[in-house]
Image: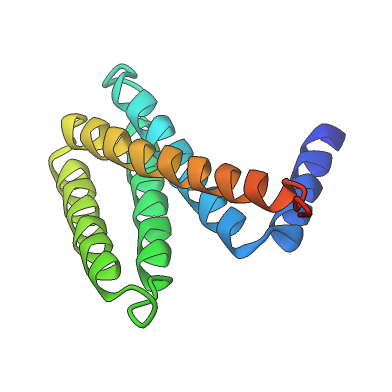
Length: 140
C-alpha cells in the first residue's frame, strides 16, 4: 500500500510541476495507458465477468482524455492545425465509442497506433525545444 501511495504522490507532483507541453504529453500517455488496458481486457476469456467492465471503463477514460486534449486546442494560435486536430480527436472518439458498443478490439488498436504517432511527435518536439533552449549562446 505504501508503494501505491508513493506512486500516487509522484504522479500528482509530476502534474503540478509540469509545463503546459509536458501536461499534454501526460494526457497522451494516460490515454495510451487506458487503451492498452482496454486492449488487454479484450484478450481475456469471455468467462471473466470483469472483462466488459474494464473495457467500458478504460475506453471511457481514454475518450475523456481525448476530449480534454480537444478542449485544449488553441484556434487563435494555429487555426488550421487546431481544426485538423479537432477532426482527428472527433474521429478517435467515434472509433472508441464504436469499439465499446460493438465490443471490437480493432478500433482500439487503430486509435492506439494513431495516437502513439502523435504522442511520439509531440515528445520529439518538446525534446527539440528543450535542447535548443539549453544550447549556449555563441558570442561573436
